[in-house]
Length: 156
Image (tube, rainbow, N blue to C red):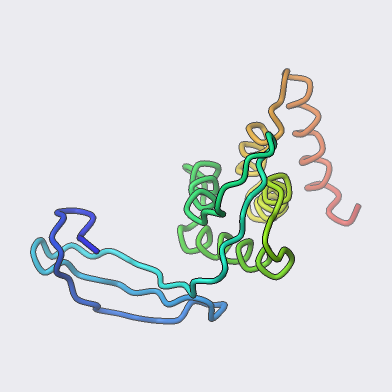
């Protein structure tokens, strides 16, 4: 692994701790060349899940794509990177428990939307607008009305 800032291959671990769910190890590293710090995560490598895309293609599950979707949806929102990492961990763990070899991409999208809805309504609407491929403003407004209704009436 090389430093993401300067590309130097040597670094040292300055802090190491287990994630909140106990499924990963978070390591803070310091580059021995430029002195900048960066974080890495160590996860148990499990049998790879295959994602069945809408068009029937299959590709390996990629946690980084999942995390990138969270990051994009939560851009300029008060959601920390640690929260996003935890969300990605939760979904990956849930999928591994629920599906043995293959998971439909729609299932992943629905789980992402449920998690985002609880974390940040704006991020949820951003993700939903891309995921559900809204064709017009009316579809978008219906989704917004549903979100607002759930915020004003959380029990219903």
